[in-house]
Image (cartoon, rainbow, N blue to C red; front, side):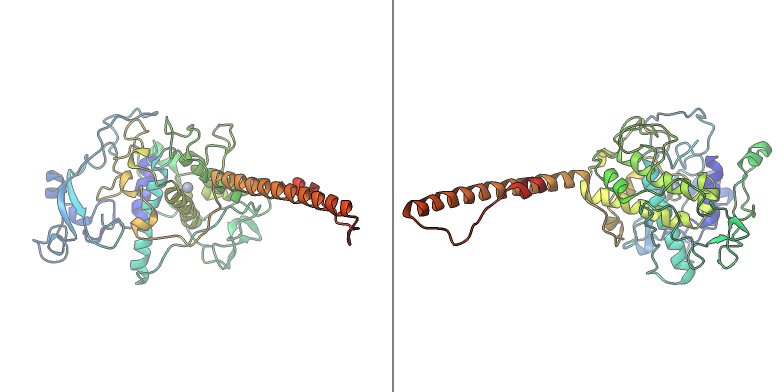
Amino acid sequence: MGSLRWLFWAGLGYLSCYCVPRAQAQFPRACMTVDALRLKRCCPPLGRDPGNICGSLQGRGQCQGVQADTQPWSGPYTLRNVDDRERWPLKFFNQSCQCTGPGRPFTGIDFSHQGPAFVTWHRYHLLLLERDLQRLIGNDSFALPYWNFAKGRNECDICTDQLFGASRPDDPGLISLNSRFSRWQIVCNSLDDYNRLVTLCNGSDEGPLRRRPPGTSSERLPTMEDVRRCLSLQVFDSPPFFRNSSFSFRNALEGFDKLGGALNSPMLSLHNLAHSFLNGTNVLPHSAANDPIFVVLHSFTDAIFDEWMKRFKPSNNAWPEELAPIGHNRLYNMVPFFPPVTNNELFQTAEQLGYTYAIDLPGSLEESQVWAAMVGFTTGGALIALAMLVLLLILFQRQRQRRGFEPLMNVSFSPKKYTEEA
Ligand code: ZN
């Protein structure tokens, strides 16, 4: 399943960084030679000058030995020494271009879910996709939009013909004919067939995009309160760094940790709930990326991750160096990206990587608690001041009465109103 997914990603866009010439597949085409494969060396020249290995003459990159994570893994992985993704990408190459170019962030079983790499893998994928789209439309300032799915709605507000496609009236599980996505074909969906035939997905059309017909779910999309609670978790991830991790920001964001306590996998929240709500093509990890909504759903997820990074400024060792499931250790090269890039390299604020989100996410639980405490404090202060004022007035009035004065107005204070508010 995983290997099919990475093949699919390869089909979505060519993976490249600045120092590798255009590559239309998993590895740069320039590295698909007998020599390169035998030498396990993928260091093509940039441009026409054969001496410009990895764009080194322009300072874009250098040919270096690939470092692969050597720490032990945890989790249900039984394919040791069989799966090509193990110690990625050493089964194929042990030398590759290491990017150094200025400016861009990426000059530089399941390997991308149910573990810490969930956030970094999807982030890197979006960065590559964004770059591909920039090239495609010839506009370097193009940026992927996000979809704020945390509005607690019971309908998909971006499923309109203008945006991602409304539902088709005569067959509500399909996309409206007025949408540009009505004839959008999905790929790499028939996992059972590939497994039965022991073959890999070749990217051919496998039918139309499907989504849940509107108004047929009792489920609701996540709420801002869910986001707020998730952002109140200070621990990035917790052992066993899997879908049963508790008090883990990552697991809460991914949506296995039902916020507020009880833990079990059918309970979905945030990211998982958004996928599940959309249903159809969106509901299975291997097919979800076929729906263009995947992109905007994940950029919002990334925005929440970024908010957490800005808020808690974690040190590198907030990420497990070892014993996360395979693909999820801190220094693991994310599969299938090439040249290799570790989880650690994407564990930064978006700003450090060269982009930001124009969104204001709600304060964390702790912040609201501090706020509540401050309100309590100031209310308490106001009450004390009020009590002293009342006392002074009583003393003053008594003095007046003693002197034989009648007050001009009957002033009475009742602190009740304030205590109620407090
Ligand atoms: Zn997802």
